[in-house]
Length: 124
Image (cartoon, rainbow, N blue to C red; front, side):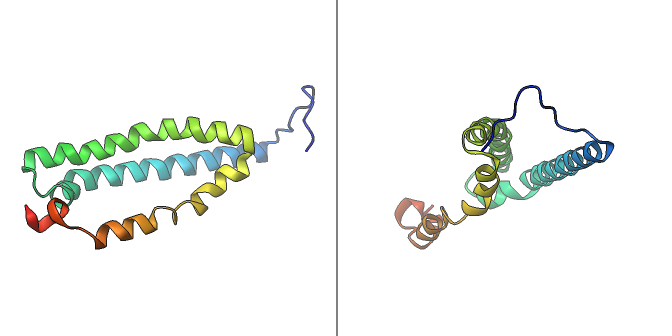
């Protein structure tokens, strides 16, 4: 792997600038849509579904708390994955979302099949 000398500059053609701008626009639109959709679902659906034991006035803020957690986690994730990308390369960071979803799957399966005692929804 060669290290680029400080005197070398990448060539910026109008086509490359348009490509980068378009990619940034598409990413921003998708991210905004994701947050808008999640905020709508948090306001309407998540409170009664995920916090059934709470009063409606408390379930909605609890649902928005999950939204806030995601909002705070994104910059922290960008710092972490930016550091990893600097150390190991972009390819490793860009492949991590493809390889990471199977990791929590066995734990999720185990939790949903073994609800007993106070964790069981019917025991409340």
